[in-house]
Image (cartoon, rainbow, N blue to C red; front, side, top):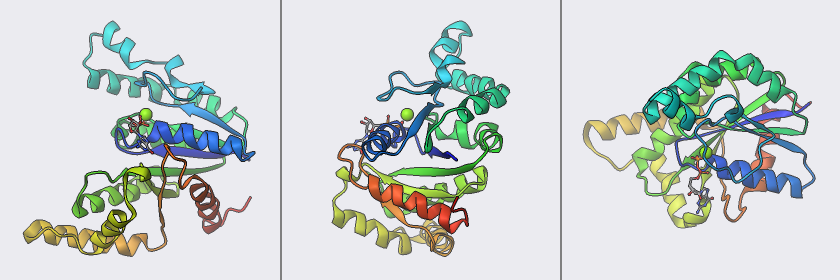
Length: 242
Ligand SMILES: Nc1nc2c(ncn2[C@@H]2O[C@H](COP(=O)(O)OP(=O)(O)O)[C@@H](O)[C@H]2O)c(=O)[nH]1
Ligand SMILES: [Mg+2]
């Protein structure tokens, strides 16, 4: 049965690029996949979607037809999709392949902090997992804690296992990324904020012990095979080997 793979992450973290590069990698490795675009605000996509939410609603058209601001149109688009979620899920479900790779709205909050994400997950049958993309470029240790917490929030909101993936690995040198790993257990900030960061990082270490963080570059292809293997392990650890 096909595995649904939902790619989420903050705007610009590299979701669309990962869908495209993972798709190419899978094709080259003899793994069948279909691609689903759930971003109604996407302008151009680097891949040809097998199912495209823009056939139902487009942010640019809502802005014109309903004189909405960009954010107003994004919220309206999410409402339209939520209202037709069964039809959307059925269309996705009808796609064949080993994987259904699902690209989500640029603005993660539309998917995670409204009904859209959880409604979609509960409407999809079969195995579903999420990839939380974390862009570590130009961030501090405390920011790393908040980004990793996003992965846990996504699991809680969607109710599916998730993997944390560091995007744009080609932009990080190995030494710097090791530095971030250290920062998670000892964030540098001081005072009340330092204490908060420290407490959150302890919680994160406790909850995330079982989780690996996988660096991936959509540009160079680094880490894609490792990501694929981790997806297999994710389902094994959830007791699903089918
Ligand atoms: N250097 C580098 N840039 C990337 C990578 N992945 C994405 N980007 C760039 O990051 C920007 C945002 O990527 P996009 O996939 O549109 O992000 P999304 O908003 O999360 O879908 C684009 O300019 C991409 O070219 C990567 O692996 N390496
Ligand atoms: Mg995108």
